[in-house]
Image (tube, rainbow, N blue to C red; front, side, top):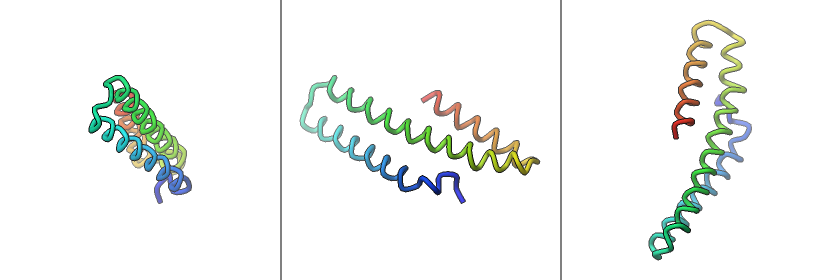
Length: 93
């Protein structure tokens, strides 16, 4: 079971909203909308996608990592390393 199982529908709704935002950006470019307006919408879509990523990361930490740490052993170490790598990727993006 994945960590975001309980919030799956909320995550999917947010992703569909981001998808709509990106389609809107595509329409803006197709209709030659002013650059700054397009960039504003790209920024909004990026922030929305980052919010989804943070939600997923929080769920991962609260469920997958916490459960592995409670059990202990090599799987706990692996989950911590995996979470750290995910955080590093998010910070760099």
